[in-house]
Length: 258
Ligand SMILES: [Zn+2]
Image (cartoon, rainbow, N blue to C red; front, top):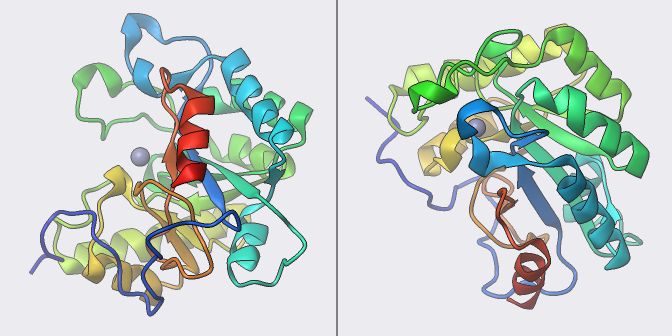
């Protein structure tokens, strides 16, 4: 039996559905993939941000009055236990490509911005072999040593499953393994509790969300667009996807106005 149809529906983690309109008291979560020079052959170009653009986006948010928060602070804020923080924003990265160590970490340190990295736990030190296009499958992934340096730089590590699989298409027992084992492996190597998950390809459904909850995740992030409030389902948290050609300021203002 599989965990059901492929989709991007809301989860069932016991929380209420998001309200139709976000208020100014909302948590913004940004989704990035990679930062650095454009790879040869323009592979992954759409998900690859030049360093100056990445830095500029962080500074834009500071000027706009946002407060950068850690993953733990973001979840505390959603639980209404950080009432003094206004306009919180959490920076997240998916996959864990090695370029992040070279190019994103120095910017995060210079700008004193914490972040959350969702690592494909079964590909640490390996290659991006799960990617659909053959030209994208040979990007080196972060090593354990580099991940420890991320931690030292204020970056929390979350799970992006073991193999970057399609969670809604695989047998239920396999999905359980992907979520439980990735958490266990990351915690064992990094000596830090792993409480967050990002669904590969943004794919989840109520059954997958239930598995995430039972595996012990405090929160799971989707690719549903929009802002988060204390009412947002913790197993269907929303993120604003930032791509190479995203008109950043316009996109942020549009998300804020909805
Ligand atoms: Zn991914």
